[in-house]
Structure formats: structure tokens, C-alpha cells
Amino acid sequence: MANHRASITDIAKVLGLSVSTISRALADHRDVSEDTKARVRQVAKDLNYRPNHLAAALRKGRSNTLGVLVPYITGNFFSVVVNGIETAATKAGLNVMICQSNENVLHEKRNLETLLNAQVDGFLVSLARTTHNLDHFAGIQELNIPLVFFDRILEGSDVSAIVVDDRLGAYQVVRHLIEQGSRRIAHFAGPQHLNVWKNRFQGYLDALRDFGLPFDDSLVYHCDMTEQSGVAGTRKFLQMSPLPDAIFAAVDIVAVEAMQVLKEHRIRIPEEIALAGFSNEAFTMFTEPRLTSVDQCGEQMGQQAVQMMQEMLASHSGHFIPRRVVLSPKLKIRDSTLRHSSLLID
Image (cartoon, rainbow, N blue to C red):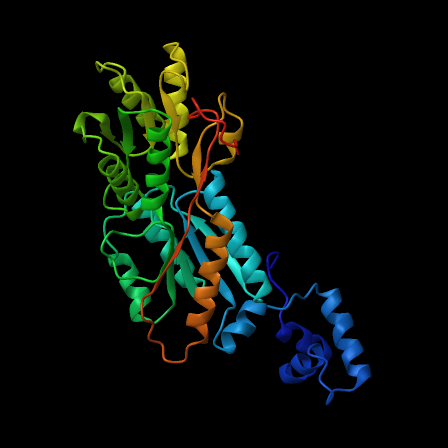
């Protein structure tokens, strides 16, 4: 057959030797003569034989492969996390298989099945925006396969996870806006069933309270965190009287869309309306003005996720007590929020 992949059995048939002899020869076993080894290698080369490392690993009870599931890899944040995962996994002698859900829970479920069928040793997962329960992860937990979430988890879920302190990051942003003179701070809030957006909203509320500013529900635009949301929400804010004097978006892409709408209306940033995002996407350094944002420590998050996974894989009990690692966010102050200060711009 044209697509037939040469196997040890094929080599054995050509040479008239046993499969076990071929296997030992390819492994350079001392019980096999150098002449036989040379003949086996030559035939393996002629047949374009390639060893099936996955099958060999599975015979030993391990695939040495981690399944990684992310909402998307087009943005900077998740690509940085994945880079951290791959770097740490490679050092540990592990491979990774990466799937993206495209923010769709149905795709997320299919990806899990794909990774299960590939017999990965463990799962590193960041949930899709449309995931509202963890029912489809039950089978993984029943099989005692290590499962580590990162960045996004469901509120109230008791799972092992690596997250950033989103509440603190949002608090830092809003405190900075207040220190720059803002008093009517609008907020783009994401779906509240996921930790990242609920905690960012809570950090926004905390800062308003701590600095004695009243909460105005009309200044909060709840949305699905898409580009279209940034346009629609900003247009809504611009119909208000008085206008907001700052906008804090829970993700950078929404902030960038808001920036375009403000420019269309010839509103000066930050003099009339200051603007900040969250995630520190690469493009925030190239907007005009450059966008203030919060760095989520993506590289560190990916590496910590692999470290937690390694600890689970090393456990012989098969029972994993959920634990959470919380990383500290870093506020990146740039032109889009600076009005009266000589603060160092990142």
C-alpha cells in the first residue's frame, strides 16, 4: 500500500529474523552481533522505517505528552503562555499537543476527546468563554488523569489552577485612573461566570469604594468581550451626559476598539477620556496613544502550570488535592492614561 508505514515486522520478514531480534538490534542491545545490527539498520533505512515513539511510550504506561487547550492562539497572551508551557515541558522531556476551542464549548468538548484518544498524560486547560460547567471534564477526573487549569476557571470551582490576581490588577488600573483625576470611570465587564472577568469587575468596584467614588451601574457595559462589543459599548457611553472621563476595558482588544470610536468622535485621549485595558497584548505598544494595560505574566503562568502537572504526574496515589497558585499582575502605565504625572511610561 502506498501509505503503508514500515514496521519492525516488515524488517523481520526481509531478514528472516524474529521481531524481538529486530527490536533489540534497533535498540543497540549488546546481545545482538554488530553484523546483525548493521544489516537491520540498512534494511530499516531502505524501508524508510521510523520508530513509533508514542507506541513505545504507551507500552511503558506513558505517552510523555501533555494536552494543551486554549481559547485561541491568535492573541499575544495565550501564545506567550503556550511558549512558557513548551519551554518547561521540553526541559522536562515532555511533548505538547495544542488545541484551540475558538471560544466555543462544543469545540472544547471535541478537543478533549481528541486529546483523550491521543492518550496524553495530562491536560492543561484554559476555558472557552461559552463554558458554563465542567461536566465534560468529569471523565478525565474519573480516569485520574492530571488536570490543571490556567488563567480561566469557573467561579466557585474547586480545581487545580494557575491564575493571575485579576482583582488586584483591575484595582491597580482604576486606582491609577483616579490618581490621574478621573471620577466617572466606565467599565467593559465580561461574562461573570468566568473568574477573570468577575474578578476584574470586582477590582473595579473595590477601587471605587476605597477612593470614595459612587458606583453607577449605567457606567458598566456587560458584554462578550469581542471587538463589536468595544464599538457598541463606547457609542453607548458617548450618549451619556456627562460623559465618562475614563474607560477601563477588561481586555485589550475591546479597549482598542473603544479607542477607534473615541478618535472618530475627535475625543482626545487621555485629556478628555483616559483609556486602559487588560492583558498587555503586543499591539498595546503600537497604538496611538500607547495603551495602559496589565501584564498577566503569561510565560510564568505556562511554566508554573507544567511544574504543577509534573508534581501530579510524579504522584503515585492518583488522587490530586486541588490547589491554586496566584501570580502577581504588573500594571504597565502608558500614554493613554497619563494626564498630570511624570510617571515612567512602560
